[in-house]
Amino acid sequence: MKLFKSLLVAPAALGLLAPISASANEVHLNDISNYSDIESFELFNSFNKEEPAQDLLLAGGEGLVDSSDSYAHDGGFSTTTSASFGADFVIGAVDGAGYLQEALTFDYQYGMTLSTSFTGEDSLDLVIETGNATSASGTILDMNGMSDKLNLDGITYTFPLGDKTTVMVGDSTDVSALYSTACTYSAFTDLLSNCGSGTAAGLGGGTADQGTSSTADDASSATIAAAFDFGNGFTLAGGLSGAGGDTEGLFTKESLDVYGVQAAYNTDSYGASLSYALTDTSATAESSFWGLNAFYSFDGEGLPSISVGYESEDPSGSSTKEGYFVGLSWDEVGPGSFSIGMSSTANFADTDTETYQYEAAYSYPINDGMTITPGVFIKEVNNADDQTGVIVKTSFSF
Image (cartoon, rainbow, N blue to C red; front, side):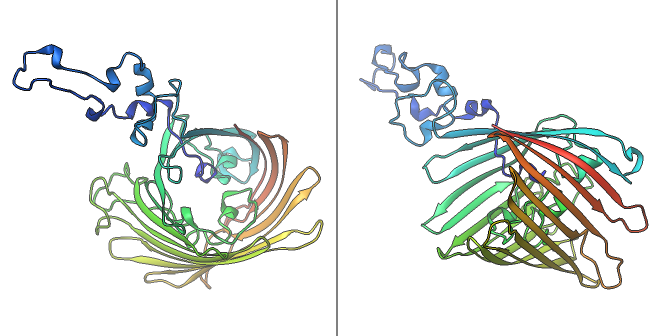
């Protein structure tokens, strides 16, 4: 799923939703006392024979911004709308992964993005995705396992307030979407993409509705987030999200809500960020998280950048837990880039048996729209065989 969080899409039929508003049809009465005089009616705009109907239907809302436009588009998307697409093919085998142990499997995922600006500074974004990734290889990469069905994964509207503040409102999106976490590690598996602070710095949306046994609306969460850029490397961001807003109401005792804030300082060669999150775990309990991340890029040919992460978890009624991460990335190794890292598989209390996950991957571009990334990983499993996997991912962007 995270592989497509940045893909913002909608089908071409979205343009059909652009309203042909009543204001587009002006009725003039030459003699208001004579309603039977049909010749006194004049119809403009949408009924003008010189302006094709399909232009109105596929305008993508263009007329909502500037009605002075003379419908210069050709029946496709609005000129303020951009679309892009991406796909991943994954072939791999994982030893120690249950009934498919050592089996060579193939998975795919596909995403489409659609972004529309109405003012030149705002952005209405949608994401649609599909995939069949249910194997151990696809799961470790957090690919989309949707049984080949298209899914609207989220919709957001982002806009500026002044010169330094950005606000985002949407459904099924992350509170951390506007964060500037200090991590430059290029992760291969999903776990290491969290950079050691998956909840504090990677806070998602509200997760469940406690009022019903159904989980049908659990993925839907109303989120509002904002970020302030001080302009000198310092940023401050935060937000909140609640599930069940379409049925039970926002931020009620029936919903599991989340709140987060982050302060960060980043430059080209180093950075640090401190994140905090509060998550409802039930109607009467909650957990708090603190996350610290930092990176440093060494100045010199052939030297890597190092990223580190730490997270502390304080659940209600139980002991504090901790997790760690460290990763090294080389931007130029031959024609591609190389990364190696390790992370706790979860946050652990002092009395727990800690387990870790290790990975190494090499990524190289075939052309501007195609990249191949072979990688290996080892995942320790408590009281069971460790998982060892070899995976090759081919990514397409167009």
